[in-house]
Amino acid sequence: MKVALADSYHTTCVGHGFVEGGSQTDGSFFSRVEAGCSSTYRTCAIYSYNTFRGSSTAYDSGTCNSWSLDFGSYTECASSARVYDAGVFSEHTHNAPNWCI
Image 1 (cartoon, one colour):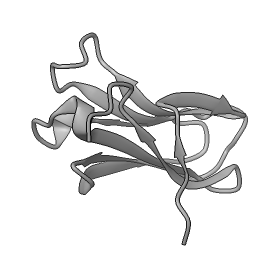
Image 2 (cartoon, helix red, strand yellow):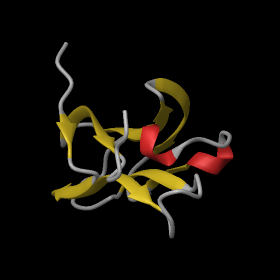
Image 3 (cartoon, one colour):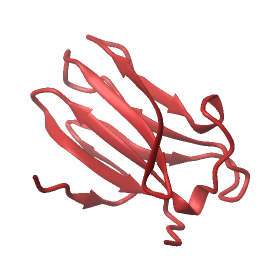
Image 4 (cartoon, one colour):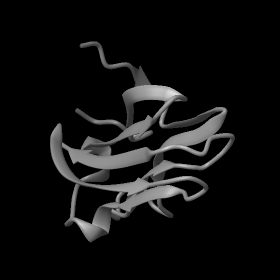
């Protein structure tokens, strides 16, 4: 299985990726998959130091939004968002914009 790495956030029909908070050092960030042009099943997961920390799902017109602080307190630069949107794009990872590992 191949997993692609991408910029922190972009739009390919559907906006998705790693969304930093107001500060890149406060530990508050999101893994997000917007509804965009799809009405499918979406997942968005938080990873820190390449370890799964938690995830959310959304269906139809809902936005998938996982907030890091719902799962614990993590170093933002060592974290990433793993996202998936059925029928739009395969599962892949978006690193923090200030990636440090």
